[in-house]
Amino acid sequence: MGPLVEPVTSAERLPPQTDVIIVGGGIIGASAAFSLATRGVNVVLCEKGHIAGEQSSRNWGWCRRTGRDPRELPLVVEALKLWPSMHQLVGEDVGFRSTGILYVCDSDADIGRREAWLKLAGDLSLDSRMVAGPELEALLPGATRKFRAALYTPSDGRAEPEKAAPAIARAAARKGATILTGCAVRGIETSGGRVSGVVTEKGRIGCGAVVLAGGIWSRLLSQSLGIRLPQLAVRASVMRTAPVEGGPEVAAWTPGFSLRKRLDGGYTVANGSANRYDIVPASFRYLADYFPVLKMEWRHLQLRFGARFFEEWRLSRRWDSDEVSPFEKVRVMDPPPVGRQLEDARRALEQAFPVFKGVPIAQQWAGLIDALPDTVPVISPVDRLPGFFLATGFSGHGFGIGPAAGHLVADLVTGTTPIVDPTPFRYSRLIDGTRANPYTGV
Image (cartoon, rainbow, N blue to C red):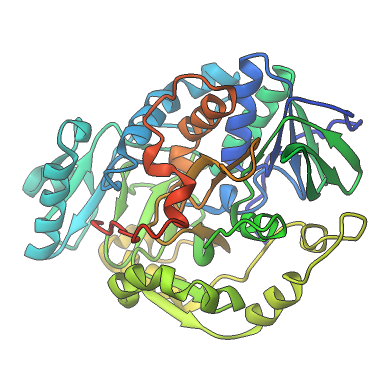
């Protein structure tokens, strides 16, 4: 079972008509609803389960610029302008603290990669810099292991995933958005060649635009429209500890573990270098799309063929709008964590920081990261279906980038000058033969 997420009250009635419908109640969908509602746009958010039930509450809680893909950096910079004032914008504490983030280096090769990112990022790296020696030791108090150096960004921070998206969704509702939970979208209707409404399990809602921000479910709904979305899922396992005294305030990544302090005094901990990839039918369909990133990252991916293949095969069968959809059959995707990965992470953490020895593990969970072949999200209209927009495939970066991504979605839907150049996030790159160019600098 995933983390306990703060509740969001669902609207009681289904509106017959609205301007924009957002499908998916993670941090991207909630942020887009908030940005649209703030502009006076009538918006309805439909979530099949509960707000932030899946990856938006299961991630590390990092809000970082450090090591980001250069194509994402402009949007990340905008997000980190929003996070420090998020409590004022939404009227609630989302747990954001500017505690800094470290990417620790163990070798000359690691140092070279971090230094190369600083040059590549240029002015957008802002306060990021390399640290070593006494300065690094001061940032990692109690460490018995000596690290060579680290890439450090003091202005990066952390927030609480269980609080953030729900707080943003509640703020959107106060601005006039309609938030519907337990309300799966079964299909999208068109008229005259453009979007005209959606069919939910509770009835039809007419609209002029639909934003699909459904995380790992986006491919399945796109597929029902005949829209190709080469999206796959990566399983990431996480645990949280009981409160610990004397641990680092800074969030840190090392080759063996990652950690960040929580508001409750415990720590969110994960394996910094390993994720599980469950082979599913779509893995074969999109093998050519993913070959470049598989070639670069095969050491860090644990491929597995098992029950997940058959589960997805059953869910991928076609359905009609008057039938129960896959989105109702699985309200919240709750994959089991990979115990071995977490055991390895805990062992490495205790070796580096003796203060964690014997500290109880309060909870373990896993989530499915929605990934695209170039590890860059799609935030874009789909030209072949006017009124249809995608905001998905954030490849593990969605939480930190979420507030600015929602702002960009609202810009595109309303035809406002975009907060950043949306070209890197265009949908067309996934279908026009553009070669995937994944960035794996960190």
